[in-house]
Length: 638
Image (cartoon, rainbow, N blue to C red; front, side, top):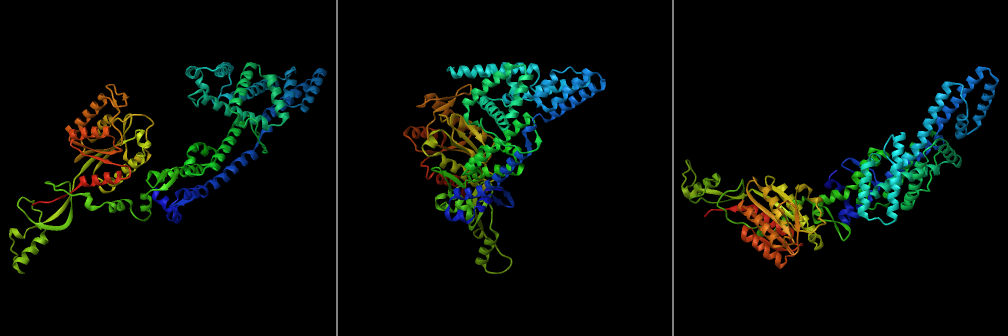
């Protein structure tokens, strides 16, 4: 699916009303089909999302958190009772009767009874100890899962380190409440992560990122507990009291949970889910299920609030792939890109907060955009001037003129023979004289290599110059790519520093949130890019400000306003280098100040290039007209 196909899919409504936002909203909700590709819309995806939530709730059973352990405990009791009854001793028979009473106890009661029992069967005793360790691990894991995504943190050594980690984390929160300096807090956090990073594979960069991730996990565990019956909650608490000896770990988790509840009250700590399925799941699986359900809820909220494709940019497509399926993930990914696709193609633009069609989009609905652009150019204004040598290749003008001494012998044979026949009349042989010779008029093409320097400093958007400059750059790229494919075009953007970008990425360009107009670095990059390129070499610079930044000797950018003599001198030295390399610099000044004008006059005196003062409304015409004028010339001889 490309921008042209998408534009076509937007239909007659777009052509009639010119409102891309309304058309995109309709496609966003209903989905669309372009060139045989079907993208699901938000309505369809919301239905899939509701099905996924219902499937999870109707599949799982929180009541079976310890179902397997409970069944194993019953087998332990039966094994021990069989051994007691087989002994035949009265005391053993009494102990067997006592064990029978455990059938009426809950899991915590059976564990307590077996802990107080003197086992006769070695097999039953061994299996019971194994089950106790399994229970301890499961109960411990509920604390582990709340504070870390790392797997397997259940050994005694790991639990000790986890307790230390939680104690330090709680101490950091205490210091924050006391008003710790942010820089000192960040240093403490970096030191904390150096020692405990193995607990946090998600690699948080700040304390706030870490706390938010932990709050999300702890809230999920709270929802697991809220979703259990009071009896189930009581049973887990009783088992924890019986089997967990590390009370400090429990206390540290509790302290952290209270703090995070206060810091992130909107995480749904008090929410619960109604699981009605028959598939028993453990605490870890239950917590994972809660996180999935929470992610489904967040996705639903985002989709319901989305009124434009750009609103879907924050959706985690990979997570959607895990929660739902590839088809939904791919649809959301493409829906999120609808506006970007049209914008990158130069078919829509934001004007005062609303999406609007560009003239180029309107033209493309009916005809080729570049052909229309050529028709807009006034051929008389495009300019023609004499040239003494042919360029690379030539185009016939389909007119002729008499040959003159010194002209290349490029005869138009038909015209030459006609001249001889007209002079002598019909008959063979045809006698030719010099006056009969006619040569074709040709329009030469001069191969060119161009680097466009585009100013991305903050003054460009502040003065309303960025968008026209960007659109001009995109138009120049399209012109060269389609009409002059042998020509070279490079693009350099500059603000505090300069950067080379691929012309195809111009639609992604935005201004830089930094101060500085570093022409020196831009000229240096452009000169290097043009080294070895064929034909006439030129730099086209579009700017609205004087040079206010340069690179010092160690490559660091320095900014000063007003411009310093050093910045101006270093910039002009780069101009001189371009001049020595036979590279012409043509400058298009937007909102030219007297200082900028004086500086550009220096540039043109040193380089021999030209300078244009224009505004953002006519920039595109000026640049394209000048490029065509320099790119194509008519060759004539006298």
